[in-house]
Structure formats: C-alpha cells, structure tokens
Image (cartoon, rainbow, N blue to C red; front, side, top):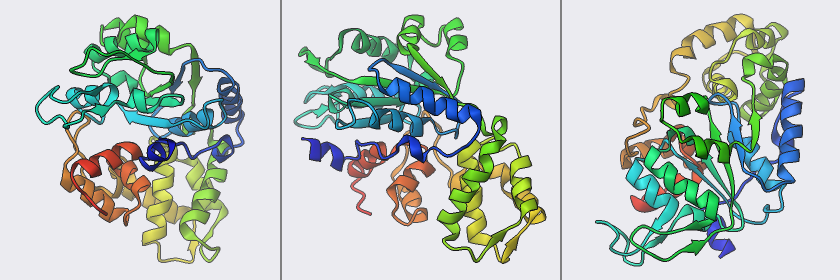
Length: 325
C-alpha cells in the first residue's frame, strides 16, 4: 500500500535545511516549524503567494512522527467544488454520472497515518467546510454515495494567502473551522521584508540554472536584485533567474542588465512560461496539461508549478486524460 501511495506522488521531499536564508525572521520560522513538527496539532501556514508555504509543510511532515506516512497535498482553489468534494472524500460506484465502477478512495483516506496539506484553504466552498469540520472533529469520513463510516488518522496542515478572519466576518469562512485550523500558526514574511535572504537564494538558483561559473553576476547585479521588491516572492525570483539563464547572451550580468530584465518580465511573472492557465474555479484542460509538460520538458514537478497545482493533482489529471508523457 505504501509503495502504491508513493507511486502516486504522495510524499514529501523537502527538509528544513532546504529553506535558505539568514534573516532572523526566516530562522524564527524554521525554529517554530521544528517545534510544530514535534506535535500532532493542526497547523495553519499564512503567507503571500510564492513565499514557500508548502516547503514548510513538507519539512514539518518530514520531521514529525508521521514522516514514514504519506504526504497528500491538494490545492483547494484548483478544482471546482464537485470535483474537490469527490477528491477529498472519495465516492462509491454509482454516486454520480461518470463515477468509477469500483468507486474511489478520497485524499483523507489516502493520507491515513500521514499528513494532508490543504493549500489555499480559504478557497474551500462553504458547503465543503462543514464536511471538513466533521472530519477534524470526529476523524472519520464518509464517501459520496455511501453510509459507511471510515476512520482516518491524519494530521492537517493548511495554508492561505488571505486573512481568514476577514472572510469569517463576511460569512465566507466558518468561524468554528477557523479556530480548529488555527491551533498552531506559522506566518512566513514576504521576501521584501527579509531582503537579507535574497543573496543566498540567488546563489542557489544561480548554481541550479547556470550550472557552472562561466556567467558572472556582479556586485551591483546582486544589489539590483536585492533592491527589487519581488511581489511574487521566492517563486518570482526563481523564475526570473531561470529566464535569465535562458535568454542571457553576456558573460557578465550587472545591475543594468538585471534592471532591464526585471522591467521586461514584471508584467508576466505570475504567468509562468507565458502559458495561460484556467481560472481557479475552472477545470484544467487536457491541452493545458500537455502544454505545461512540453514547456517543462516532461518534468512533472515543474509542470505542476506552471499549472498552479500540486504534483499529486497533476498525476491524477494525467491519468484521467490518459496522458502518457
């Protein structure tokens, strides 16, 4: 069973040592994360898009007593309500039109003895929040179309880039669920508030994308990178270095080159590799999946990032659309 779960991509690869930075704020986050790993309480990770929330979630899992169990990740904004419900809770044969003959286990079941990471939890529809709350309270799930109760032993880690308290005020998020999720809170600051970390991050991305030391980044080039606010945070910085490695024609990259490239790429930093992805409430099409796989040269982790979904979700969508890449 464990081999089957791992083959579906339900595992965590990152550790706390993969989190780069020397600022006090990021070191404090790592310290809190390590403390949270020693407990089994629910964790809510808060931070802007691109700060590395899943990196922390995986690190917490890999340093917890559940490290040998599955790590199941799902983006609550990437799937329409009906699909999200069947993915989370599973279904029995005949539960709805198109349901598989033998039914399907939900993600809560697949995360048994491990961790489920619910990214963009603030986007979970209010109706599903009630079902999710019951799972938190009772540690039991019921598949769609079934009256059988299935016990689940899972740890919940969720993440959001929004102020959930504000959503509670306007009745878009259940207050009781918020307090259930908000037992332990980890707030990851944006990159503009910890610019001391930029140099170290640039070094790592530079080695990864440029492969060797034949391309030199000058001191004023580094300063230019540090002076920019990076509204897309670490993800935008990493994408920028990748683009730079592809289109650069100079052996030396200085501040003027950096500033020119930043201005050129700034309008499209959220649209990775210039692929237009469906809105968060529309299904991702077969063509979009193929485009992402082509751009990523078959790298599923990178393709998942382009699509704005998790690797495990990409695996399921590839299987659904019979995509062999």
